[in-house]
Length: 69
Image (cartoon, rainbow, N blue to C red; front, side):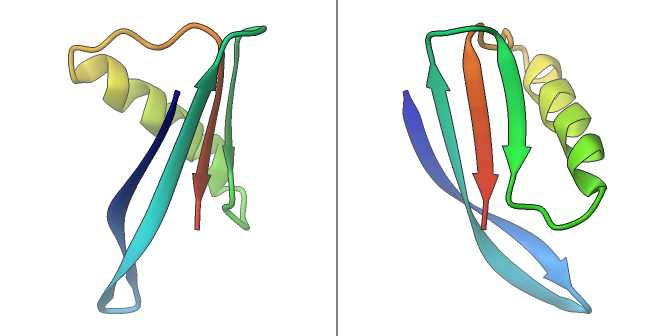
């Protein structure tokens, strides 16, 4: 399953629109966040996982890749 959505982040004091793509496939369970240039990737993985679970949805089983650019 592939999904593409728009989000927003800050750059200085300005808001910037970002595109987020999520791909979930059958396969070995894994969760990756790619496209972030710093060590924020580790923190982002936890934030995304917690946001999904706290929204009342079950975390998908399978191979999940989140790409932000």
